[in-house]
Image 1 (cartoon, rainbow, N blue to C red):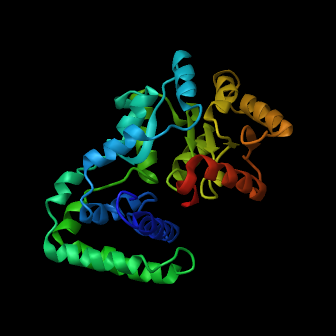
Image 2: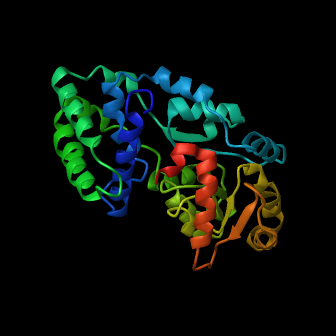
Length: 308
């Protein structure tokens, strides 16, 4: 969204609207459907599939990610990526990490095709909506955001050619992440109790919850308050490779073994910006954990860390 003027401000408001729709449990709406809601504005500003792929080629990876994936694969782990990201982005990133394309689930996104459906009338409607959204502020203007964007996205936009076209964008978030995980689980004949999943935000909470409920290992990494309550354990760190010791314990000691390792690490505590482990299963008060994650999340994710 930063590829065009004020795109970041626009995104913050739409991202907040996504949270509001998720929290009210709107029918057939999943957290992460923000990626469908921003499509009209990408089309309006002539963003292309090549632009998205180009961003992915320049993107940095989370510290320690390459090492972690490589070490796990050398120990015969199968590594998957279930991402809300558009396919043009997710495929590039996972290639950098050495994750096979058939082990990636992400959002199919024919953006260039959508660009061809935009007419002058639709462009005017979008320009007006954009000007309106840019006068709103997340949280402060929640009621206005909800009222105004409900009208735009569910009444005005569906009557346009572009609105009808983008109905097919179904971002892989929420229940769709769980469905993707179940497809991988069936394909490899592994029940969810054998899986480790790592998530960080509102798009992941159902996936974390599904694995936690079966006795698998749900890990919140640099997470926010939407993901932490659904996880067995968490790590706040600028390097995801800090998880290696915990993951090595999983095949041998399963939950009880992992719990022991995590609680030992929790006693020692983190240092600087690394190694803050917490065992969350059964924990009532996570306020302190949320604070630590918030600090590291902002370091690692920069502006994206502010978003729900």
